[in-house]
Length: 110
Image (cartoon, rainbow, N blue to C red; front, side, top):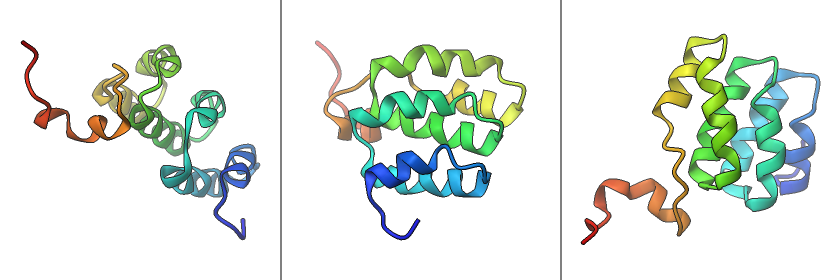
């Protein structure tokens, strides 16, 4: 992939080469939006466990409720690292997006 644009990264999620799919997920870290969620959910069944693990992390960061069933299903993944990523993921959607990165600093609910 020559350019770092969202559509190219999403398209590369279907590349036959697992390293290109991994690279696409790393590029989506900065480019992902709500339109990225369906292709990322589809990647949870990818043949490569690294791809599945990266997708879980990205879906967690996006905090979209559509990802919750896929993350929960990943708790039964054949790969222990994927299961660990799913187990560590906080599937509770959070808005705004930045709140996902600083949950420990959120004020307590009254």
